[in-house]
Each structure stands twice: as C-alpha cells, then as structure tokens.
Length: 250
Image (cartoon, rainbow, N blue to C red; front, side, top):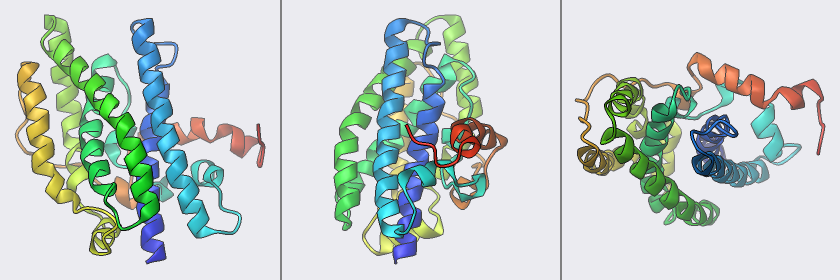
C-alpha cells in the first residue's frame, strides 16, 4: 500500500513539475508583458503543487529523501509524468493548447482527489484546484482567441492539435498504481474522466472554430518511466546545479 501511494503521489508531482518547468521557459519571452507574467505565474503554481506532493512523498519514504532529492536526483526512467507535459513549447499556440488540454484534465482529477480517502492528497488537491480553475479559464480564452482569430493563428492552432492530440489519450489510460489507488479509494478511475474531458474540450473548440480530432493511436509510456527524448533535456537543465554541486543549498 505504501509503495503504491508513493508512486501515485510522485506521478502527480512529476506532472506538475515538468509542465511547470516547460512553462517557465517562457519567462522573459512571452508575446506581451501581461501574458509573460501570466504564464510564469502558472509555472509557479504548478511547481508549488509539485513541491506539496514531493514533500508528502518524502515524508512517506523517510530517511534522507527530500523534495529536492525527488526533483533533482532521479533519472528519466524514475519520472512518472505523462508525455503531454514534456512536449516542447514550439510556439505560443502549442504552449496554450498543451496547458488547455492538461488543465481540463487536472481540474477533473483534482475535483475527484479532493474527495480522496487520503487526507493529505485531498488537502493538496483542494488547494490546487483554485489555481487550476484560473489556468483553465486563461488557456480556454486563448484557445478561442487564437482559433477564432487570424488565418495564421487558426492555422497554428490546427498544427498544435495535430501534434499534441496523440498525447492526450495517455491521461485516461490507468497505470497499475492508478488502478491500485482507485481500489483503495485514494484516486479516481481516470478512464471515467475521458468523456467529460472530451465534451469540455469540444465546447471550447466549437467556439474557437476548431475541429475535434477523431480518436487515434495514443502515445503512452510516461507513467511507466518511458519518455520522449525531451524529458532528458528538461532534466539536464533542471538538475544541472544540484548534480554539478551536490548538496548545494540556497
């Protein structure tokens, strides 16, 4: 039970950390100052969520494990984030759509986790859903703005959909630790979130004049530690200081 719980918590933390790091790459590079600040604040929210989950996982593991060691000293195969979160920014359309897809999922997930039998997970999720509500509203407005905007912005959104849609299916394919967590009342059956997620996405896509893709092959493996090449580059940057100067602290 303890091992299952730790894996599940790390999965939640890894999703937030990796996506938060991706968003942080926009800091100082946003299209306008207001949106530069917005995407950076979203990155900070996600990293804060990751910290809360890592602190809980470290408490359960005990010993010398800390939130820092979980973030900075694990290898790619030890990370359990979904592949969607590690996809590159490419352009503003890709970044917006990636956040929109994941925020739709995260809002549904945290809504269920706030009712978890695990009081700590429930508390973290209840706090985080307030942040995710803003992330979802912000990204939804941008999907509509770009999809129903200029010819170029519409085209860029279509390209982003083609590239990112294959990574959304993994969100709803339960791993062994998610299935076990559901049996113990810790987390929901993620497969049951898919229909609601698709309906919510379609509602925004319709307003944005964007076509919903037909169901296709789902890229997967992230929950089992099998990632795209992008995660290696993320961790090389994220973990550089700690690995170069071990045990360094601010």
